[in-house]
Length: 350
Image (tube, rainbow, N blue to C red; front, side, top):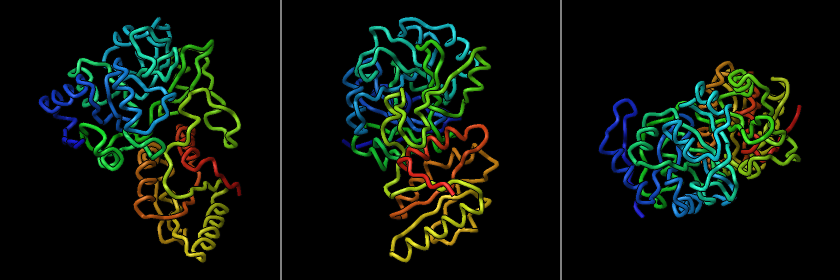
C-alpha cells in the first residue's frame, strides 16, 4: 500500500483534504492525524475490522484498548451504557483537551476496539484537524498513537512516516504537536475515580473539577515495576529507543559525575553513547552526543521534546543512552512515567 501524505494547515483547514481523509475512514481505511498530544492512527471505532487493522499496522497487542475520539459530548452518551455525573463535570472543564475518560460501554462499541473489555476509553481532542476529521468522516475514530508499538510516540508527521509508511492509507501532516505526551486517563467505573495514566492534566486538577478525591493507580510509575498497572497498555514496554537506556537520579553534581564516568567507561569499550540532559547542565557532560530536553524550569518544553529526543538517539545509532531524571513539579509524574517505560525501569540512584 502506498501511503499518501497531505500537508494541512491547522489554522486554515483545507476542507477537500479533510473530506478525502474522512472518506477513507468511512471506508474502513486508516488515517494518521495530529492531535494536541501526539499523532493518532485513526480508524472507524465502531468497525471491528478497522480496529483489527490498527492493531496490525502498529504490531500492537490486541488486549490493549484503543481510545475513541469524539467531537461532541453527545457522542459519549451514544456509546456509554451510562454517563457518570463526573464525566459531565470533567468535560465542562477539560474537553476538548488531553483527558481520556473510561466509562462502561454499550453494545455499539465492538470488543475489538476495547481490547475485549466492558469499558471504553473516550476523549475529545483539542486540535482543529482532529475535530474536523471526526465530523467530516461521520464516524467516531479509534486512535492510538501513530507509531510502531513500543517505539517513541510520534510528535511530527515524519515520525509517523518512518514507522508506518506502506501500512496505512494516509497521513495528515499538520506540523509538530503542542503538548508532546499522551492524554491523562481517568477511570470513572471504579468506586473512586482513578488515574491510570498521568498526563498534562494532573490528579489535583481532576479533583478540583469534580469536587472529590482522585486516586492514582500505584502501578503506573513504580520504579521497581512490581505492581501491576490496572490499564492494560501500561504493562507493555513503551516509548523505547533502540539503544539500551538508563536513568541516573540524584543530586545534580552527583548525577553529572556518574554519567560522565559511565560515558568514559562505554567509550573506552568503543561503544557510541548519548546523554539526555537539560539546558542548564548539558555543557557539563563529556560525551560526543549530548541532547537537551530544554530548560528544567519549563516543564511543557521538556514534555514536548521528549519523544523527538528519543528518536534522535535512534538516528545517531548510539548503543547506550544515559538520561538525567526529570521529576518536575507539575507534570513530572507524566514525564517520568514515559522515561521509565522507555528505559525499561533501569534507574541508578546516586
